[in-house]
Image (cartoon, rainbow, N blue to C red; front, side, top):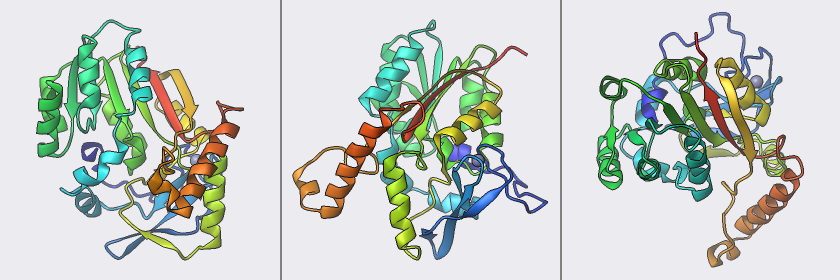
Amino acid sequence: VKAAIEPPKAASNPTGSWRCPLCAHDGAAGLLPGGLVFEKERFAYRECSGCGSAACEPMPTEATLQRMYGPSYACDSGAFETEDEAAMVQILGWLGRRAPGVFVDFGCGSGALLSRVRAASWTSVGLEFDADVAARAAVRSGCRVFAQPSELRSSVPSIDVLHLGDVIEHLTAPLVQLQELIGWLRPGSWLLAQGPLEAGPCLFASVMRLAASARPRRMAHMPPYHVLRATVSGQKAFFDRLGLDTLAYTISEVAWPAPERFSISVLSDPRRVALFSLRKLSQMLSRVRPTRFGNRYFYVGCVRSP
Ligand SMILES: [Zn+2]
């Protein structure tokens, strides 16, 4: 992930006005209650009055990002990997619609997706910032895994499908950074992306927000990994700004951050029981309007001919 996280220089807005990094609307509502503390620095989230998404304020600096995504990140980040069977099946289904070519998984983690895509006769290549994690992913998947984007670019001249799984929400200048990655592709190539929609809308997100309003001074002690908390419409507006032909934008609702299954460990913790039950109810309601409500997107865009 880190490779895409290096922010471009001079990313600050010279006029001082706030602009939503996702939908580009230039009107901010207030700061959301609560926030994060990392190395004694406070990070709040400012809400967009256009799309309802929220963005970290201030955005972490390059130096902070270096420390956030240091060696310990590989251990912390396991929860965000694409090992979910349904997500893999969805990706493989899309790849089955075109002739096998070169698939690049940007932020490939353990390499589980690389193996599956390779088994479907694709040339499967990974990028993972941590050299040790990259080496392990290469062994596990039998695919080439690079730790540097420049090495990948010089070794892989043509990419047919670029996959960003749980990457975009980490980007401090998402439009510029995505445009750079799209520059790696050629007309007819696909960008496949999936990730969280932490601002919903869904019942779960609304209740969590109400709970945060009740304890506005409560700060969580963790790095601001997800600098963007998108809504269904904010994430869609962001993809529209990339100038690709949208082939798919679908919404689902997954358990995270609520527990996935009802186990003994959940049962012994009233808070986790409440989260589990709230998520089940929220998923039931969201299924009534599956294009409007949920907490996760899946996107496919095709690069246009010039
Ligand atoms: Zn917005």
